Image (cartoon, rainbow, N blue to C red; front, side, top):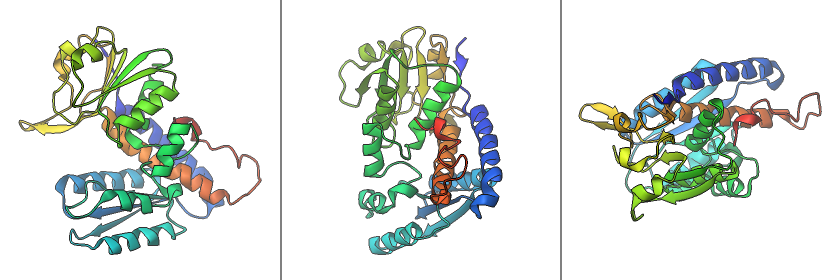
Length: 300
């Protein structure tokens, strides 16, 4: 039976660690970490995600500021709201909840977020830092995958990895993080010919295609590590991009859906916020330990 890569368990462990970092630093910092979430419109799934993020913030001691704006907001007003948060010294992280309502372009809005407060790691500057191997906020879902692999002693170095999906949110940063960890990486997508022939070469297979139950036994080589990033509601239940019941007997390790990558995405959002808070509240203080960030090992 495959080892289950339990995101819920690791997320709980990391939340305990974050609580300790925040409580130990709070008096010196003079304020808790602050995460601002901009939710635009009334998409039901976004409402659930934002509520879950607020609850996670409360559990570790992050001050959560949720701004719920109407779907008919003008782009200039939304840009003004982002600028206000950029200038707020109590805000360490800013998240623009996606997807946006029709008529709003996400690219200029994401670009308007201060890169130092980019809690989701999607600013062009931070994606460039990832590409160059420089420090900066990392995209939360792939960072969560890397943390799961590390927690279970799965070292990508020297292994053949295949990422199914090329989105800027998951697929491309995932490939870059695996490459930075010395894996040999291929990226597959909707126009890849003979997908199964490629994915069967993978020792580590990350599926972020956004298509329910796309990958089955015919796509997986025995002993592969399979990470399922997808989550979908289908036939009254939740499923991923992987046909779990087919793949689990073949894999050496696999993430369940739900309870695998999803909890780690939220936790890495908290990590990015606390790392930003740590940096912002150092204020150039040369005191003991001021240079060493206690969460730096969590960022790939």
